[in-house]
Length: 61
Image (tube, rainbow, N blue to C red; front, side, top):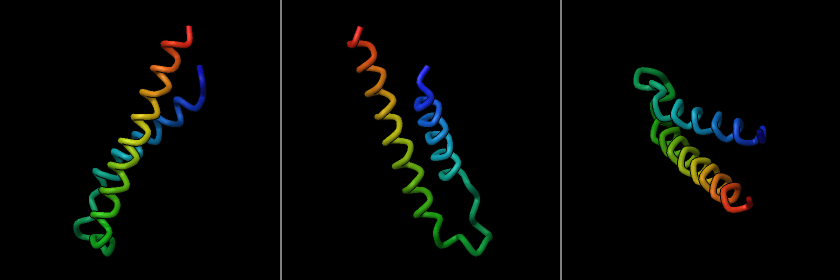
């Protein structure tokens, strides 16, 4: 199996971690919207890449 797929899955999981990280009572509370946006973009982008690889692999055989 292609090792890139595992890297993409790890990136999707890290995007979920960025969304769920609790920053409420820390000095980093001001960047919480930024981490949420980066997390959502990472999830969307790498999910689309995985779908692309899956469709490409499906029709290449």
